[in-house]
Amino acid sequence: MDASSERLRPRVAIVALGCRVSRADADAVASALGEGVAIARKGERADVVVVNTCTITADADSAARQAIRRAAREHPGAAIVAAGCYAQLRPEVLAALPGVAAVVGARSQGEVAGTVARLVARGQGTDGPDAAGEPAGHAAWGEAPVVRARHTRPFLKIQDGCDARCSYCIVPLARGDSRSLPFDEALRRLALLGARNPEVVLTGVHLGAYGRELAPRRSLAELVRAAVRRGLAARLRLSSIEPLEVPQELLADPEVSPSLCAHLHLPLQSGSDRVLAAMRRPYRADGYRRAVTEAAARLPGACLGADVLTGFPGETDVDHRATVALVEALPLAYLHVFPFSPRPGTVAAALPGAVPAAVARARAQELIRLSDRRWRAFLAGLRGREVEVVVERVKDGVARGTSREYATVCWPADPAAGDVRGALVRVRVGGDDGNVCEGVRADPPARRA
Image (cartoon, rainbow, N blue to C red; front, side, top):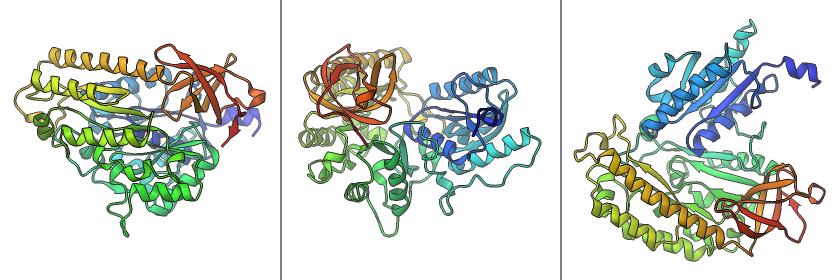
């Protein structure tokens, strides 16, 4: 396509807020749009803007509204499509915002690309298509995020929805019951992504529930093992997974473990058994401790992270101290910390014993400081080690990427030797600045996935 034709193509900007599932959905939209539409680069005016929203907290709701208002300012005259979880639960709120031409909830994610195509056509004075071109039988999942690779480590959503019904969580109301991408289709999409990218991140709302409702019944471990045996990707990363659902048998499997990234994110939420029971979590502190300890033993040197929620209704100082003590006792490298946010429609929103916001924030800050110390210590532990890194950016003579251990690593770039976007490079870590490791290229030379 020549430069003049490129300039004439309508442009679509895509904004993804929230979790990796939201980002996977946004990538699926980008891939389903077809070559007649260009994805707007940063700073380019767009004809249509898709904002994939999150609703996990009140702050997420606010961020979604702000993102839509910002899109209306930055892309005057553009048609805005509000999509995702917040759009599912409060469509009337988003429909009233300036510039919003359509609202498509998370349960209709496969319809977003078709909606965009119709808006593009309307803007050009023609009738839009009735379908977005998703593979037959899998329209509800959207297209595989392959055609337009927006990441060197793309997210593949293999599961959506959740049956767990934790008392504080709004996601099941937004995304519905647990459902899995059919086994063969998941492998097909993984193969497409793995052929173009050095790493694929398997993601889902309740990832460990993958395959339970399929006929025949499948499992995450079975999918990973099949992918590795077929050589579908150079390396695989599991996104957030419930602690009791970690496929521990894979971590020490000599056939599988070399392809798995040494990184697990295991939601904790609280170290207090009383609070965990009120949250309707399926484990207690000892169960979480055993899961983390076993994973650390099977993956020496791995990066293990956790979610923690502070200020849950009825949480006392004793409960908070139990959380701090559990985190301090475990080999966790980082925490994602969230003060409790009551979500309308959840059990926890009606519970007594509200914790003052200032107290919840103070408890969160204590855990964030603990997380910062742990992360600095984890990066310091990488000094002197060789790590395998996916090159994600090369700019001003510096290459930057993500290691198997989830560390950001930078080093002096040598494009002639293979330091190019999408390569797998071995880097010897020399130090860090508290957030990013710094190093030099290690032998052997870089290899491409």
